[in-house]
Image (cartoon, rainbow, N blue to C red; front, side, top):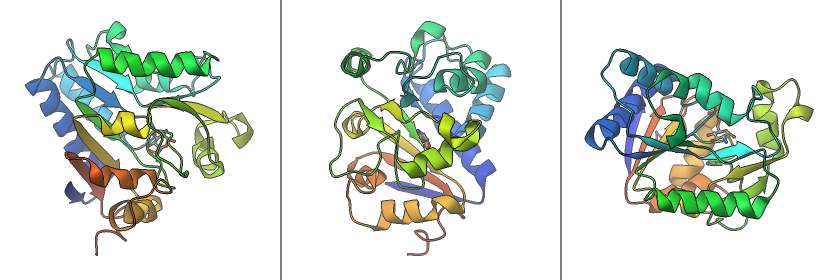
Amino acid sequence: MKVYIVKDYHEMSKKAASIIAVQAAMDPDSVLGLATGSTPVGAYEYLRKWSEEGTLDFSGIRTVNLDEYKGIAKESDQSYYHFMRENLFDHINVKEENTYIPDGEKEDIDAVCRDYEALIRKLGGVDLQLLGIGRNGHIGFNEPSETFPGECHCVDLAESTIEANKRFFESAEDVPRQAYTMGIGTIMNAKKILLLASGEDKAEAMYQTMCGPITPRVPASVLRLHRDVTIIADEAAMAKAGTR
Ligand code: GLP
């Protein structure tokens, strides 16, 4: 596990974007696993900028997103489908047909999850998986639980996640209660993983992830078992873990 402790969100974003850019340059057909939330927005801004300047080419890149709310319309402002278009896809030359996100409009849980897992396999697996981390240590939408879920599945969101994500909605009542997510097994199958964390509200999760027991109660802790993980975290996020 490589850990870079950087000064702030801005430095984290630039370094993360550089790693993604190198991946895209070294392997122009890469499958990038992408994440949503506030954490990767700055990195996406750099990728857009470098793409607009002509430094980066995404024409052969395929993308698979980690997760999507269940029961949300694609065109809704709060869908991850919409988020990805607004923050990245509409501004780079990735082909729309090469971008994949679990279909939150579909109700057939088994079909959505089976198809998404099969799709990732068909693409040859994820080359570089980008991750944020929830305040409770979740990755994707894999909430703390008794076991590590293997494949793509539908989860009941934890109250703390609904609380944390309500800032994107009118109110907490509007946050969907369920989501489709890659499983821990799906994430661990990625060839490389890049975990980003910024801000003091992630400090406890980062401490538990890096220094606590490897347990499904802290889903991100499993990343310590992966052979190629890079963490980029700012000083605030490392306030507890970084000093030990
Ligand atoms: C959401 C997403 C995660 C994300 C996490 C942290 O619940 N499903 O993929 O990493 O929240 O979000 P943020 O980056 O906004 O703190």
